[in-house]
Length: 271
Image 1 (tube, helix red, strand yellow):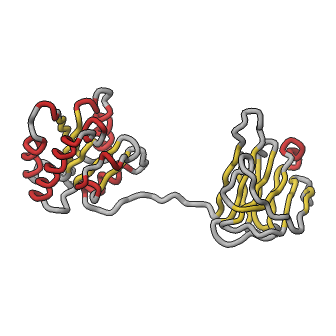
Image 2 (image 1 turned 120 degrees about the vertical axis):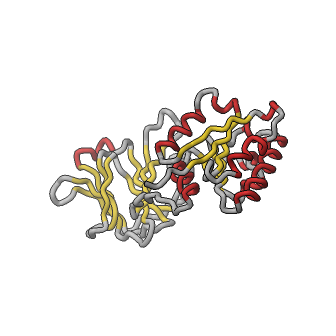
Image 3 (image 1 turned 90 degrees about the vertical axis):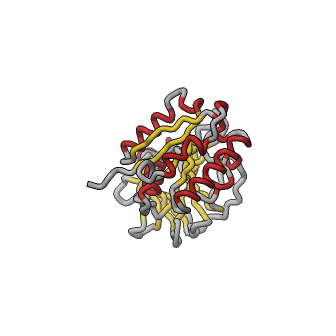
C-alpha cells in the first residue's frame, strides 16, 4: 500500500480563531494528504526557519510545505522577510522541486505574496479544484481535473438596474461558426406575456443599460409553427462569435429554442 504523503501547514495564530485552518486540514486529509499543523507566532521572537527546520530537513517528516497566506501571516515586511528566508533555506535543503505552496482563503492579493513564492504555486480556496492542485503538487503528478463540457453557444440574460423594469434581454451567439438564417422560438401560449422581439448587434452588450448599435434585420419573419406549439421569430442576419442576437422579453419564457432555421443546429434552454 502506498504511503500517504504528508504536508506541513504553517499558519498565523489569528487565522484559526474560527477554525478555518482546521477546516483546511480536514479537507486536505479527506483528499488523501496527511496534514501536520504548524502554528507560527512571529511576536514570540523565534525565527520561522528555526521552527520548521527539523521537518523540512527530514524527508520522512514532510513531502511539502503549505503556507496559509493571509494579512495575519504575510501582512508585514518582517513576516515576508521571515518567509523568504525560510523558503530559501527550504529549497536549499530539499532542492528546487520541493513543493512550497501558498494557500489563500480568498482571491490572491499579489501584494501579500513574497517574491520567492510568486514563481511557485499559489492557490485560492475560491478555486473549486484547490484541494486537487495541492495534492497533485505534493504527489508530484499531473492534475486530475475534469474540464466542464462547454456548449457550442454563449447565452447571457441581461437585466435592467431599475427595480421597476422587469424586462429581460436574452443574448445568444455561436462560439464558433455562424448561424443564418437565425431562429428563436418560445411556447405559443406564452407569446403575449413574453412579447419577444429580435435585435441583432455587437456581442456582450446590455441593451437594457446601454444603447447598442443594432443592425437592421433582414428577411425578418414571425408567426406560429406548423404544429401550433411554438411562436417563431426569425431573421437573415448572421450570428457569429462577435455578433449576437438579443431576444427582448417582457418576462422570460419557460422554454427557448434558438439556432439555424430549418437545420439540426438548434438548441433548447429552459428557464
